[in-house]
Length: 244
Image 1 (cartoon, rainbow, N blue to C red):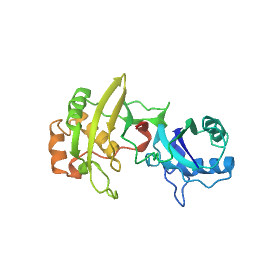
Image 2: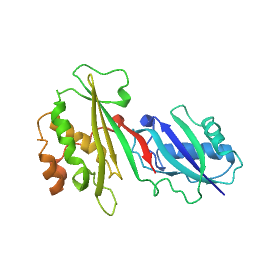
Image 3: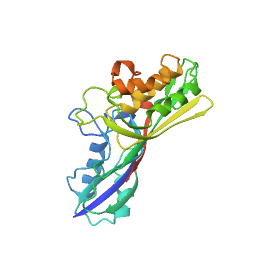
Image 4: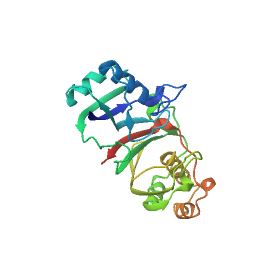
């Protein structure tokens, strides 16, 4: 038995997210079907994250157990021949049999991309969220520092999560502004359901002047979801990297 680790890139626009579902086509399902066509095996592809419908990835990590004799580095191109154009294996490698892509992860980095302009966005609109209201970048940057560290982020999750604790540690939150494009990079040891998208929505409210930067501290402390910003759409979100 061999344990194969995959690094995966995908455009999530046409999919119901990562995890297999009965009535929706997903990334996990497509890759498992490709592996079956290649090896004849019914495998369970274990993902490091369960990205939602419409969310993209540059560095999703997953692993599966196989009896196949295909060289580990050759799985990449072999699986790619069986996949649609919007899903690709970037790297394949054999790892220790005990490696688990989800449980062994030390953290992840996500990037959310905003376009802040009034004029209609046409190019790349599947990968950005447009905000027409003028945003104060400096206020948003000031607010970002309040998210850093270990906190209970229950005010920044959508109901429906079954996690035992909502305590997480954010190790990095950086804003990069180039012209009218704002990228927000968030790194943490783990994320709650829609946590990144709600943090971004909150930062947007700060940029609009509806929430003060210093109010972030009390929102986190009180854990009141109604005081945080909205959950922004999924299309601007990309899973950048998984750390081990």
